[in-house]
Length: 310
Image: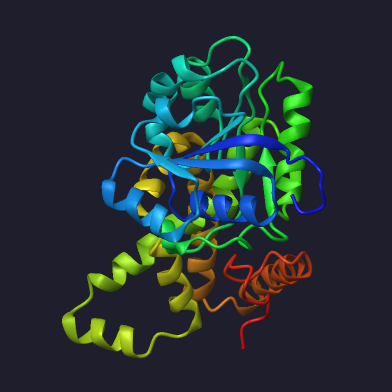
């Protein structure tokens, strides 16, 4: 580091190097948080792109190669891959290594990864609440985590020093850090992230089922709300398939609550109950103001300012 202080880690291994992984690589390098940054990608074209972009010192085909002598390993692939990845990299992990991840569900991650890790390796699951609809190593940028929350969900008995080191790492990346139980995390994210994505996929899917002439007008005259839905629905389909399958109980609970609330609004529209509609809209507007005040509005692209839609 330019100020002469030692970085937090000697070697960081990023397993998966898409939007989140490549943003971590860029931000880690920009802030001098590791002497060495390596990545793992199955595809040769991805490995070539990573080296062309210069965002890692080396990139490997297998996780076992990538994690050799690493002090921190972060899983940045769809959560359905975690079981196999943990099994493959476990024999190559050195004692004291910290394992973390960026998955949007946590109870299943702890189940799938924890069972394979050897004694002396510390597991601190994490979830940065940041992203865009874009994917691939070229989509990442160092500012992705600035001013965004990162939730850590350490299992019972997690090494305190390892937890503090991961907290320091995310704080150095520009994130605000919160500690939650895995169960609480999954219920909170079911309503704040998972259900909205499910609704967005459904609305855009409904539009695609319209008659061809109507489809053309939907595209031509898309207003702000529909544009936002299409942005959300453009997210990685593999990642979101895994999220819903691995957090199904919490998602189904929130989906049932949403369905009940939707029935109330449906009745209000049918019977002209304007006072019911107005009361609900006022409450939701207040929530939106709170989100804006907390600087959590916008696209989660830190390069774009938070602002109210016109």
